[in-house]
Amino acid sequence: MSTEQTLILVKPDGVARGLTGEILRRIEAKGYTITGLRMLTPSRELLAAHYEEHEGKPFYEPLIEFMSSGPVVAVRAEGERVIEGFRSIAGATDPTVAAPGTIRGDLGRDWGLAVQQNLVHGSDSTLSAERELGLWFA
Ligand code: DAT
Ligand code: MG
Image (cartoon, rainbow, N blue to C red):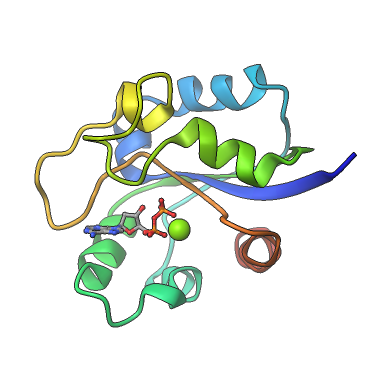
């Protein structure tokens, strides 16, 4: 057994498109437990800490703009290898090539904007999960 916790975000495009319920449904349908839930419009400060690994990249500024443009839903989810498992049900970063059956593959829209509006975020390692949960569920 390797029960883990991860941070999932329903990004502003997911909330605005009314997909929060569908995304939470998929998390629970997979067997993960939701142990924390918050809706908020994140500050630039919170996003800068969250996305510190991407600072300086060409998509960084538009990413922060997009992520602070409206409410997001932050989810703490728990389960057997949930960190890797959620990234697998989320699908590839670019929704235009994300596999069918995944959240981004089934529901993602890519309008060729500066930033991929790809509906969800999921922590990518135990270290980032711990760090990100500390930021969003302090
Ligand atoms: P992921 O969200 O799959 O972990 P990431 O951590 O590499 O992807 O990037 C964070 C977010 O930044 C991603 O969800 C969308 C945006 N992004 C990443 N690469 C991009 C690119 N090449 N062009 C535009 N936006 C990008
Ligand atoms: Mg990432």
